[in-house]
Each structure stands twice: as structure tokens, then as C-alpha cells.
Image: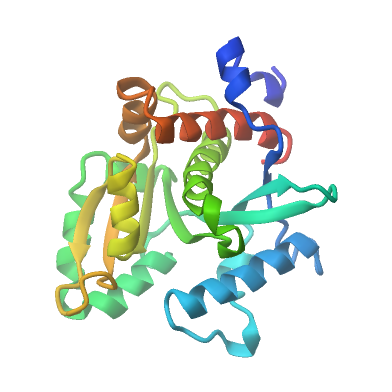
Amino acid sequence: MKAEEKFNAPTSAEDCERIDRDVSYQLIAKPNDDPGNPLFQEYDATRVKWVQDIYKWLPPFHTDVDELDVDGATKIVGVTREVDSGEEAFLGAMRLTPLENLDDSLSWSMVEIIFQERTSEVREALLSIEGFDEALREGKVYDITRAFPNLEHSKEAEETLLRMFGASKGYCDIAQGESELPGDYYWVFTLNNTLKAFLEKHDIPFIEVAEDEDDPNEWTRAKIMVVDMLNSYHHVSEITPDDPSHQIIVDATNQAKEQLATSA
């Protein structure tokens, strides 16, 4: 069976009408794979602005490139839109790294910095999530880092984040291959209350593992969180499929599978 035939793209007239063909989902080539790739350069420049404006952190040499950007297993799922000039406007991206060892993940290194003496407690809570430990041993846990919209297109920033969620789900489905339980994997990431509020607003199920209680600022308070993708996507696609936000996620998942099948 060909890769593009393995996944179910939208087939009904209603589904096809909902697909935005101006939007594309693609894996952004990394510096070691394609030096000077213009989309990666735009991604890096946008990422620098994001960490400066949102996290008040100044990356060295005005680049945010780190070890995951040259890691062979890491993938960057990008969202672009064709504009009047025929060029592709960069809307946002999400970086995913399959984990072999929790200690090697960027999210865990942040946990150690943020939670310090509570690190063992956080690890215990994380590994107690049903199915998580087994999934980690099977390579079915993804570290989610540097997920952000391009604020130059702020009017569609929320929609971009929803598309990123769906497109990254589509990529992971392809990467995991055929399975008895499609989507049976987990995402782990650190975030603040602003992003938590986004997930809550759009009714995307998640598990909050721990929170930095020492930070007096409620909105910058760091958290480590997990999305059980099997249950979360079931909720989005089967329990509340008429929710407009969930339609965006499902459509992006299907479209990304169609577009990424030959490149993932």
C-alpha cells in the first residue's frame, strides 16, 4: 500500500468544502538538512521575536537555533498560507521530538530548572499517568517545543494554533504507522497559564502534571502538561465534532496527512 493511500483524507462534499486549500502543512527543513532554507530562516526569525516578546528572553546572536533544530529525529511542522503574490506566508509551527529517554528531553530539562527539589515528585506524577510509562518505552511520547503562531498574522493566530495541533497530530499518525489504536501516543510540554487557557477555551483535553507554585505571577507560572492524543482527539472528533474549533483541528489533521504522507 502506498503511503498516500494509508490514511483517510476527507471524502464527503461537506468535508471537502471545509478544507482551506490556501493553507499548506509542511515539514520545515532544518539547517543541517538544507542550509539556508528560506522557510527555516523565517521560522527562526519569527521564533526569536516570539521568545523575546512573550518570554522576555534574548537569544544569543539573534537566533534561537538549539540542539533540537539539528537533531535527526526532531520534526518541525509548519503552517503556511498562499498570499496574493503567490508566495507562502509563514503562519506558525510546532516542533516535535520522539523521546527514548525522558531525561534527554528539553521539557524535562526545564522541569529540573523550574521545579528543582520537586523534580522527583513531578517525575512520579508524570509516570503515573495511565499508559504513559509504557508509551515512553515504545517511543510513543513526543516532546513538544517551540509551538507558536506568527503574530504578524495575529488575526488568525488562534486558528493557526488549532491548525498546528491538527497538523502535528496528522504527522504523528504517519510517523507511528499502522496501529491497532491510531493516535495512541502522548505529547508532553511545558507552558504557562496563557497557553493553558487557550486549551481550555477550545475544549482540548489535557492533563496538568505540575505547576510552579513559587511564581507569584499566575499567567507566567510554568506547568508541565500531557496530552493523551488517543483520548483527546476522540473527544475532539467524535464527542464534539460540531464545535467550530474542533472542525478546524480535524480538517487540519486530514489535510496534513494528505500533504505530509510523502515527506514524513
